[in-house]
Amino acid sequence: MTLRTRSSIVTLTLLASCASVAAQDAPIPPAACAAIESDSTRLACYDALFRQDSEATRKADEQAQAARESLQKAAAEEAEASGRQLSRLRGALFRSDDPLLEQALANAGKGSLLDSRWELAKDSKLGVFQMRGYKPVYLLPAFWTSDTNRTPHSPNPSNTVTEPQDLDNTETKFQLSFKTKFAENLFGDNGDLWGAYTQSSRWQVFNGEQSRPFRETNYEPEVLLLFRNNYSLLGWKGRMAGIGFNHQSNGRGDPLSRSWNRIVATVGLDRENWALVLRPWWRVPDGNEDDNPDIEDYVGRGDAMLTYVRDGHVFTVLARHTLRGGEQSRGALQLDWGFPLNRSFRGHVQAFHGYGESLIDYNHKATYLGVGISLLEWY
Image (cartoon, rainbow, N blue to C red):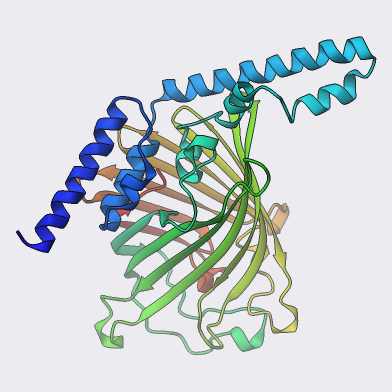
């Protein structure tokens, strides 16, 4: 028996074990997933670890609500007797001597969409320095635009192209993205520090006359500190909030250089098959060497992403806006649809309209349409 054969048998055995345990509604040991050598198979195991039905999430939320009401009732009774109701109530909301109540509060939302991505519930955490998927990973062999940006420009004269580039309006786009947890439970049983990296490229693969160059590649490392939440708002469940630092650049020299840094706040809510993530941001000034001093007036000052998951289909709407009116009211809208094809690949369709499909096109408005396959979606 070859080494590869033995490795495959071990992998299949581990996956079978994960599936068997999941079928019994018992927790899958994280070590069973960590021992799998294949990246894609290991990720599938982690997916099975988190995959819960809506009924399990509903029960976790109900238990958390009951625990919260129990704490509030006890605090109110004690405060009424002592005459210090407000201070006692505030303190009781954040601590309890009853481990069962604390456990219920810490596991609110277990198995929900946002919990499956960010390990928010206390019993969902898998430890640090293990690779996870972040944004979708896809290949779009055909990525078409209605208006090719042949003369990228910026208010900075050093970042303005004077000679039109010979570019095709159809190219190939692909994206790679992953994240890992640097630290968890920084504040009691809450507060996780994540690091993430995303890279997206636009490749002029059909432009043989120009030696098929990469037209644009964007590099986006970021660090995020996320906290688990547990509140209700208009039928939605508030699951997480956080703050992070985001850098994005294209790694090119002048006049094609583009980059910026942001402090990004994150608020996440979900309900059944829906997830909503809101991200306002503040740009860190770049001083006199700014490649794109007006980027906020085109790409925007925040975005909102709404995702719907059903029967293996993932629909996502991403909207950005400058948060200004009149002539400065600009932004973009991106639609993504991921759907099952087979065990290994998914189909992926992407449509974009507005400013900033890439950094080099931050102040260029156009429509884009791409079709291809994906290995990972948002969920």
